[in-house]
Length: 107
Image (cartoon, rainbow, N blue to C red; front, side, top):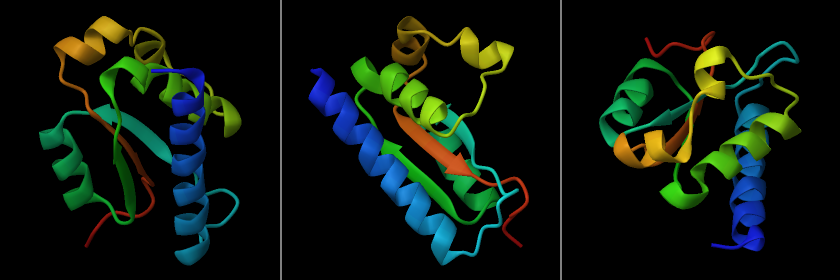
């Protein structure tokens, strides 16, 4: 995978986030939460929150795309997120990047 692929994935995901936020009337204090997830975790998040944005990302570039999105949204990383590495992504079958808003549970 090359830098162009990483940049394209990042831009496309950010485009989807922006459009969804506008469509659902997010306020300035509404913040996207992100999860690098397995297929089962993605399904659970989608059942619990609405809207969600999920994208299947090649494991080889997941970390770069995830970091690129967080950086462009000026979001800091917690300790658990900082420890995420390529081996954990590959071993954990973390194939999806999922965005959701904690203030918008599915009812």
